Structures are given as structure tokens and as C-alpha cells.
View (spheres, rainbow, N blue to C red):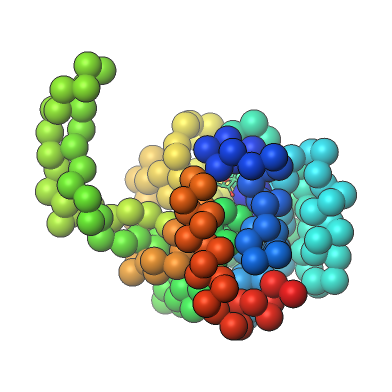
Length: 225
Ligand code: CTP
Ligand code: MG
């Protein structure tokens, strides 16, 4: 089963509606993300977390899709995932997949699940980092330059054995991604090759790129209709 965090406001995108409802090629990001999960053929149930006042609208967007439910998210992404976990039916494995990664190829989703099926308990897609990354202090002074070769930019879907993810969320610690919580349990998290198309739509530039990419992709345009 999959949880889709879609309850953010999209402040950095700066559109007039919460980000997951912003259309790309005529289709809201949350619909594209859900259809990608369905198209992967490896997800049986989907729970979407949206702002409380938009539950009805989100329900209407996915009304004709089987096994998709909608619940209210929370103030932070971590709160939204926790709300989704509470609403999740019995499942042995759980994917967590950002609505904001609306163009994620179904093949990447299938690869995450394939890695879970080999017995991995936590699997995340990641890409090599192309920029040099530096740590800085509060004054903007560089404190270090980690070896880029050992860094990965992490995407979603992130896949977990359900029990492990529930234990991680029971820790009630801050983290910027789901795997970060699982790491705090001391569990091993495996990185598999990510996909550039799974980029997170965060800024207006990202949205322009997503619009262009979707216009070039006949299959995706068909889904968008
Ligand atoms: N998200 C969520 N609940 C929140 C915050 C974020 O479900 N309280 C979701 C977003 O909807 C998005 C994903 O988590 O699909 C990744 O978050 P991000 O890209 O930061 O989206 P927003 O929080 O909407 O954007 P911003 O931070 O610019 O406001
Ligand atoms: Mg955010």
C-alpha cells in the first residue's frame, strides 16, 4: 500500500492553491502521482493526505479510481504521514510517495517494491549529487566539504516493511524524510538508483520544467486527460 503526502501549502511554488492541487498539463499533481502508483501495478491501496478543507475536492479528483482513500494531513509532512499511517489498512509493506514528485516513472516505483521483495526492510531511491555540497556555520563560513562521491540526493517513493515504519514513527523525533526516522532505529536503509524524472516540484522553475516534460510525453498526456 502507499501513503501520498499532499497536505503541504506549496509556499515556495507561490501558486494560489496548495501545491498538490496545482495542475501540470491540466491534471493536478496529486492525480498524476496517484496514477503513477496505480500504473506501477505493485500498489494495492493508496491513502492520500491533504489539507482538511480540501478532503472533498481530493475525493472527487480520485473518485473513479479503486482503493484510494483521502484523509486530513497535519502541520508538517511528518504529521501528515503519521495521519496516513493511522488510516492505513493492514499492510505488510508501505510506500511513502510525495504528491510533489508528480512525474515519477512507474518503473521506479516497481523497482523500489522489487527491492523490498528481496527482503530489504527499507529502500530509498537516490541520485549522485552533481553540485559540490558544503557545510556552513551560522555566519555563512564554510566548515567542510564532504566527498561528493559518497553523497546521494534522496527521492520518493521510499519503501518500508510496515512494522519498521510504524516503529520509526512511534519514536516521535524530527526528520526530513521517512528513512531518516528508520535510521534512528538503527535499521539498515538501502539506496537504489533513482530517476531524474522523480524530481520534486518545489519552485516555479520546477513547475515550468514539469509542464514541458509532460507536453513531450504522449502517454502521460493521455493520463492527464
Ligand atoms: N506535505 C504534507 N503535509 C505537510 C507538508 C508537506 O503532506 N504539512 C507534503 C507535500 O504536499 C508534498 C511533500 O510533502 O507532496 C513534500 O513537501 P514539500 O515539497 O515541502 O511541499 P510543500 O510543503 O507543499 O511546499 P513548501 O514547503 O514550499 O510550502
Ligand atoms: Mg514543505
